[in-house]
Image (cartoon, rainbow, N blue to C red):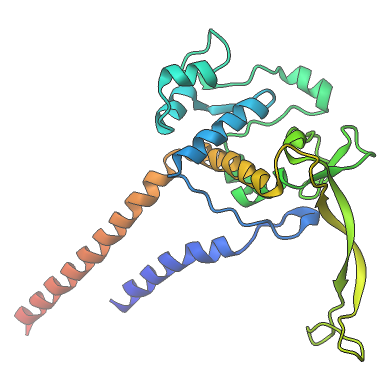
Length: 265
């Protein structure tokens, strides 16, 4: 019984431990935390709209189907076809294969844009969320931008109009002493030094504020997380019932075992 309780404890605690460990995000450091809301239908709908308008021109979701997304996101088929499906020959049962030919995209970008169906499962939602928000201006690059999470990325910042101009800047940061505290001068003031490599968005240069853009990207990554595993919310919901079943079954089995033990003695 003690071993079973210990296993239950590990089952509940392992998810929180894994979630607490951030994935590495290149020059940015630890990735920003992203907690998907797969039951937030409005967020998923907005994310789907953003993906179709800004991402689907180059990237495909070839392991997903139009009809499945329409059904899961509670979008009526007629509205879905009129606003999210481009091409009169596209059927709801078709896979979401992009129209851009690999040979053409390689000529433009040097590499064919990857399929994004499983990108959140490959890199993690935290990584994708941080990546899409850390483009900055870099005149030395072919498209004038670079990325802190994935330096040298061949992808242009397609959301620059929404986000605005983001540049690398410098700022004064406290100097940390050997004991882990902040070094101070004889007057008790923090001793600082200038460090560069911090992202700064020029206020008013984009259509959205910083918070609005973060929410915009949240909806997009939320949708991409759903696409990577459409049945995840159902699996997580059913998982609690399965755990409850095992707990009740184990308790009943233990009580039955005790009754059998009485017969032996």
